[in-house]
Each structure stands twice: as C-alpha cells, then as structure tokens.
Amino acid sequence: MRTNQQKLTSGEKKLFAGCYYAFFVNGSLALMLGALMPFIRSTYGISYQMAGMLLSAHSIGNLISSFIAGALPVYLGRKKSVLLLASGGLPAFILMVLTGNSALLLLAFFLTGINRGAISNFNNAVVNEVATGKAWALNLLHSIFAVGAFAAPFLVLAFTNSNSENWIYVALLEAALIGIELLIFFFMKVPGNRPVKKEKKAADWSFLKNPYYLTAVGILFSYLCAEQAINGWLVTYLKDSGIMTGTFAQIMTSVLWVVILAGRLLSAYLSSFIKKSTLLLVSGIGYLACFILLILSRSLTPAAIGIIGVGFTMAGMYPTTVASVGTIIKAYPMALSILLTVAGAGAILMPSVIGMIADRVGIIGGMSVVIVAVVITFLLIAYNAWLRRGGEEV
Image (cartoon, rainbow, N blue to C red; front, side, top):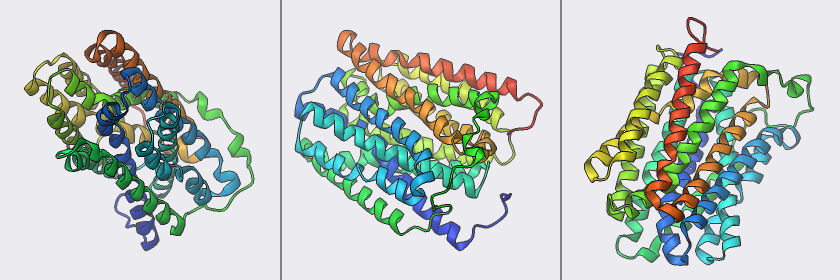
C-alpha cells in the first residue's frame, strides 16, 4: 500500500494531472448552472418550479451516470466508458443557448448531469486506486473541484457585468472546456482500461451489510441534498430575498468556494494524523451552526459570515467520507457506484422541493427546508463517530 511519503511515478503524475483538470471543469460545471440560473430564468421566462426541475434533471443525469459508470467499464473498459458518458456535456451547453423549449432545456441539464457523474465516478475510482484510503489524495482532488467552482461565478460576472445577455458566451466557454476534457481522456493512459470478464467479487454485495459503508451512504445522501441546494439556489436566494444584490450574490458564491478550497486543503493536511471520524464530527458541528446562521440572516453581514462558515465546515465532508470507506470501495467493484448513486438521489430531491415551495411561499421558505438535510447529516456523522469509537478506521 502506498504511504503518504511515497512519491508518484511519472505516469501517475500525468494521470493525476488529467483527473485534476477534469475535476476543475466538473467544479465549474456544478456552479455554472446555479450562477447562470437567474439569467436563464430571465431570458426564457421560466418559473421557480421549472428552474427546480432543471436542476433536478441535472441531478437525475448525475445519478444515472454514477451507476452506469461503475458497471460499463466491465464491458467497454474505463476510457471508452468515460468518453461515451461524458460526451453529452459539450452539446448540452450549446443547446442551452439555442432554445428556451422546456423539454430541450431539461434534456440539456440532464446531459450535464450524465457528464458530471461519469467524471466523478472515474476520477474518484482512479485516485482512490492509486492512493487507497488516503484522505489527502481525495481531498486534493476535490480541492481542484473547488477551484473550478470558485471560478465559475466570476466568469459569469466578467461576461454579464455590462450585458446580461452575454451569459450565452459563458455557456459556450464551458462547452469548450468540456471538449478539452474529452481530448485529455482520449489520450490518457488509463489503468485497468481493458474490459474484463465478471468475476466472483463483482457479484459480491456483502458490502451492503457493512455498517460503516451504510452510514457513509447516509451521510453523502443528506449532504448532497444540501450541497446541491446551495450550488443551484444560493445566487437566486440571496438576490430574490433582497439580502444581497445579484452582483454581490455571485461574488459571495465564489467566496464560498474559496473557503471550501481552503477547508479541503486543511482537511487533507489534518487527515494525515487525525481520525477521519473525528474530523467529520468537528466539521458537522460547525456546519450545523453556520447553516442555521445563514438561513436565519436577513442582512448582508451575518449572511456573509454564515456562507463563509458553511463553506469552510462542509469542505472536507465528501472526500473524507469517501476515504473513510476506501478499502471497501477498492475491494468491491460496485461499492463506489452504489455509494455515488444513492447519494446522488439526495441531489435530485432537494432542488425540486425548493422550487415547488418557493413558488407557493417564496424563496426564503423554499430554502428553509434545507435545514432538515443539514440536521440529518450532522446526526449521521455523530452516529459514525460513535460507531467507530475506539476502533480502527476502515
């Protein structure tokens, strides 16, 4: 097993570089949809409920892709699988700028989800395989995601500051970035790329009885409920509730991902000598407190403090949770797919719920339901710490 001190080989460095670029683009994609949503709503005149359905379509694509991406390499190999599933992202952003037709917009958002799920599954699997169970490696990977997420709102601001209709150029730029991503994967030397026959271990589902694994699934499900709500609705919420101007809301979304980046780098460092369950518990306490502050705030300063606190405390939750069951993921071929697929269902649920409630009682009431997901995340993290008390991490 690789230790923290062992250096990566030249081939592994190139592999990591490709994965890092892909996760940078994935991060920009994740925040781009939320950052562009006010402009898409204005251009095409869509309701809160329809906006929520678009975000949920993205999450549905993400969920389906996360599952398929785990099984498809058995038949096609890793490279062909990721290229096939990720290829829809490029035409999806082009489609967004060409039409306001509801069905076609739903298709476009769905295809962005297919792209995101394929990249997420591929990168998490490859990095975990090279550095099994090492939280630093996955935290670093997800830090690159945060860099892309941070950049997206600033790109939107840079293009739309003088003319709101220029949002279409941001969408086309994202399409170009995805095109480069596909070229990188095409030329990448991917480990375990050949299709393989099904082995006995591939049909072994005993990991579904593992309490550590099931707890991790629950944490990621509720976590992604809240994360997707924040990614998709934060700009709209801050602007339409009157807490901030549209420009400042975009800036605060980028600030959110700056502190997420800082938090993930700190988590990567701390995870080398602090138990993952302890790291998660401390993060969970801060996450709950800061989100309550954010959702109760009705003025700029406390809301900004809440956003910064939420970003910093939630930063390491996803990669640290995945790393906490890293040996299970490596031992069972379908474990990562099931983990990402079930967790992704949370990202489908919350955006539509917010949209439906917002159309009836307003955007403040819609966003308030996210507190339920945050509380559940904290309770599961606390249970995880209790489950692992005095024991070895898996």
